[in-house]
Image 1 (cartoon, rainbow, N blue to C red):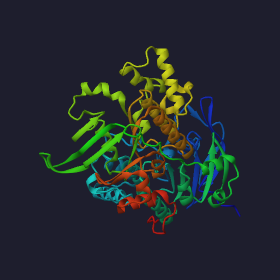
Image 2: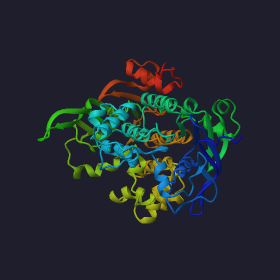
Image 3: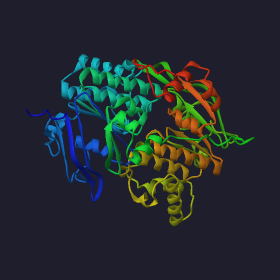
Image 4: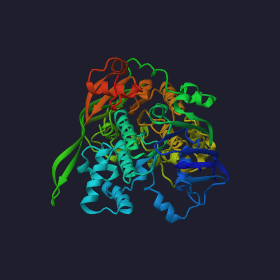
Length: 540
């Protein structure tokens, strides 16, 4: 009797970019209803392996020196384009790591989700619109009916990720490849999305290839795990066995890695660097032929904020709570109401020409590193751009030295400064974005989810780096994050936001030890406790 082949089988797969090997002779199999996790640091080959399954790597730059990829016994490696189009989005769907660069900025989310339903299911009209609404409600997008015409830039990072998940689930695929699907999500929504994926898997017998750097998610989600390092699988097995008795030193290192320590002590009598008073950012909602304003989205609604020299202010809350909008408003990158003072100077009424000299002193690291890095510029040119704008670092040789120093500080090889962003992993691109900001030696650094795309060991390195830079230069940080484990290691003071308002604020140590507001208590329970109840509700 012939044995039934696995749903998906990857055998002896190698991937090279030019002469550079990225994946070296890896093998794994995936059965119906099973979840297999690929775990490893940025650059370990996880995403490249997943993209190879759907033949989405850039041809002819990427090639496969060896291996095969079989779907129910059918070879996909080298399959005709027409067959691959039938497979993509229908039998195998993928949630990509960076939603902003994966979504078309010119099309509404209704059009983008509808495209795959129209192509593979032939839906149109009212049936199509109803299915799109159903999918958006399924992934927890608030006010789904009102969001159908929204463009990607009108959604928060977590909301964009939910749209990507809705697109992937649209045709109820046999296999879902989830490449860091909860990276941009806050902890409470993360728990909901993971439960949703498990429910869908149970209902449809869907297999999941789950790519992540978060081992706490692997423990919850996966049946089996493959640990990757430098393009190779160094250890594989059942999740329970691997967590209980890891064999490879690298696996033990990953399990032990987590941001540790406490933030630097606050400087006595330190001056305020940035102060915001009664800040408001309201976006008008327009209806009708005349586009009259009928209501407002109150993204930031009467928030007071201050951060002192050498202090880290942690801003936490769910996706869409107003965290990023607050950061952009403080930097005058979004129009707002209310007073904003930078080093004692009122800047909310200052024109762009007068504000420009201050820009080097207040920098930002954006949430989506690939979207904020120009694909046409090399890494060196990206970091150099700010130096040129502000006339810093003298001649070209001096600038190259400054660029090399900035790259070394974030753990990148200075020799990579002539490469381009697409040649780096997601975590490496985030480090480039941090280096670009640090090169200008700012007084204030707003960090918008700077570690969300990083594996845990690099998270710990970045936290240590930020603490050291703060001690050395007395930097002020506004640290926006949904990862409270990282926030706890960095922040002196906490601001907890919900629906555009501050629901709790105070010294970080006090808030973590004794949260007063029910929302803060729920956030801490979801973030700092790995176990959830059977109904998906996180409990302390």
